[in-house]
Image (cartoon, rainbow, N blue to C red):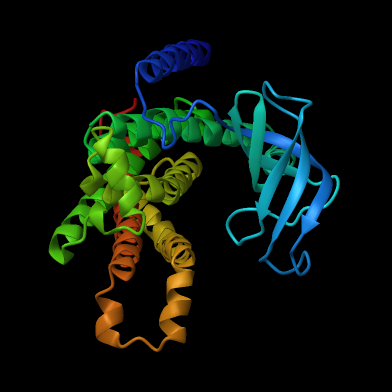
Length: 374
């Protein structure tokens, strides 16, 4: 049976991957800069021609440098580049510094500006450290967790975002991704077991509840996806696509709460399975109480985790509020504060209500009071 379910799972992944490839290959996107003579390339600084910076520890000033291009069709060529050593763009350059260059080519003439430090390899190294830690600590299950994480990012990049881009309701796009990611992730971790099916059902239910609460709270507070900080850029994107900006904010809450809700669902279903295996005579009511008891402990920690995650994302805003002594009426009515509150509360409600949902489902399944998952 296990081999049969694994075979079905592999076939599903192959079909899903092929479908994603076909789906994305038929989407036409409009780039922010459509100049065919404009590139991003890797390069190495070979000479600092002029240095108007104070020192490498302080942002500001400018440099003129010569760089050797190390990627793309102009690999091996040397050109001059301007480096504005700012906070967001540019970086302090010295001979041998690896950088990313915005390269312009017109005829045989090349010119460029330093976009930033080339940190791509280090980013992948950090990801590799995570993968190694998961494998060393979790073994085979840790490796499966890493695969589930990779699959999640693939779904977000190649399914969730493209679906919204072509005009699908952001909420429905998020629901589709939540269902697919939940099924695949929990299957990788739990397999096609009663525990896995109970956790899948509870996770999807909990995330949908979080999304519904977020939508309702947004209506009440008159907050939509148009009230975000990057709205000007998003409007430009919507003008060149079918993106429904208004629903993007709250669909993102479904994605953001998925991990925490899934953690709670899997933990409770696993606990009830363990209790049932040791004491199979327990009734559905007794198993339900055990699930609720475990869930109460998890609600506090996981809710705290989710709230703090959203708080961390708004820490810059909170510093400004503190520094400028903003009055209460201004703070409580700021869009940014309202958005973070709705995110945190909606996600937490999803976690809280996942506890009884998973407890009920798991208790009925393991006690034999339901025909599910037999």
